[in-house]
Length: 193
Image 1 (cartoon, one colour):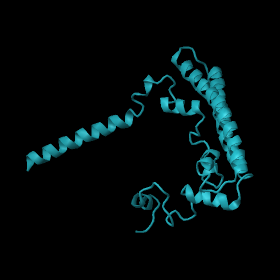
Image 2 (cartoon, helix red, strand yellow; image 1 turned 90 degrees about the vertical axis):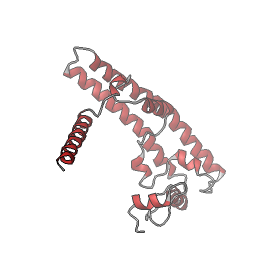
Image 3 (cartoon, helix red, strand yellow; image 1 turned 30 degrees about the horizontal axis):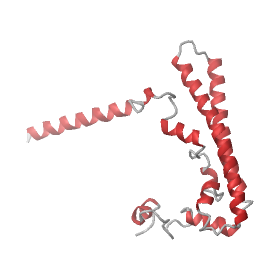
Image 4 (cartoon, one colour; image 1 turned 180 degrees about the horizontal axis):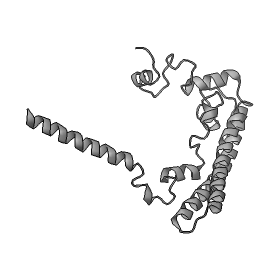
């Protein structure tokens, strides 16, 4: 009995130490990044003009994104004119997002580099943080503004259909979007079994 108690205490101590080490070192491995705040995937997404989650405020509130509208063109029964107009919005968004993304990456690179050198002062830091914040804001604006433009092209019925196809129906339990595991979808959305 005593042997089991000692073993249990030892296992508990090891687990607690492991948990403590993990909680004190959540950034282990990140110190090798070229830019401290951006992963390689983040950089690739920004360089490619991908959304990076910047437009969720629009997407999840009934403002369809041009890329997803084009992906769902057939299901939304888009006209040739609607497809052409949506493609124009998407192409312009991509071009601007790539340019603004490059500016954001450069601003984050400058901020990271400033901390890698000695002599950074509060004034310089303030300017670097402001530049990085503005660059991030500019990228986000590009994506969000294009979601606004889609409403001028789509009918109310198409927007409603888009929201259903993307899984944003008013009642997530009423339908499971294609490609989702039904049991997992229902569990994650609090649906009654």
